[in-house]
Amino acid sequence: MLIIQLIIIQVMTFAALVFVLRKIMYSASFGETKRLQQLNQENAKKTQELANKIEEAEKQYQEKLAHAEDEVKKLKSRAKEEVEKLKEATLDKAKQESERIVKQALNTKEKVREEIASQMKERSVDQSLKLVQNILSSNHQRLVHEGLIEDVLEEMGKIEQGKLQTKTDKGELITPYEVEKSKKEKIATILSKKTDKKISLEEKIDKELIAGVTIKLGSLVIDGSLAGKLRAAAETMRKG
Image (cartoon, rainbow, N blue to C red):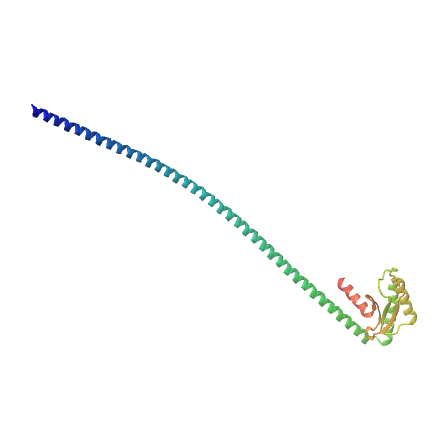
């Protein structure tokens, strides 16, 4: 009986020990499971937070990418506009330069033409004077001279009083022949009347003039010579 009681006690003790051990193991397993669950929850939360951050980062990246692409488009557009403006400015400058060159060439051509025309006119005047010298005798040349003086007196008489402007009252009367005193005084009188000054003239002989007279009063020149008449006629013919 005692042995049975001892066996029962041992069995009960063993069962209690097993129960306690199982309870301890269960408690440890439950705690570990709970800890693992907490860790899983924390990991899940962190994973979700990380996913949210990744999503936010991706969103910001796409926004920045879209903004960058927009800026690139704007830069391309501005660059294109600048290129077009530069192209237009270059073309306009080239056009202006070409127009300037053409205008300069035309001006040069016109100047050359005028210079040639002037040289031809002078040559034609010189040739005409030589012809007069060769064809007309001295007496006939003297008659032409006297006739030109009369023309000068007539033309000067038509000028309105005060119309001739000069700063000096002393002038030169250039002539190929000595002018009659009365005509010389008449010329001086007419000049005094037209300039509102008392004009005195110094006579100078220049045989190359051939016929007529040239009057110089400072910068004022009255050309009544045969050469002057020929130049005026050549100019009239050129314009006509």
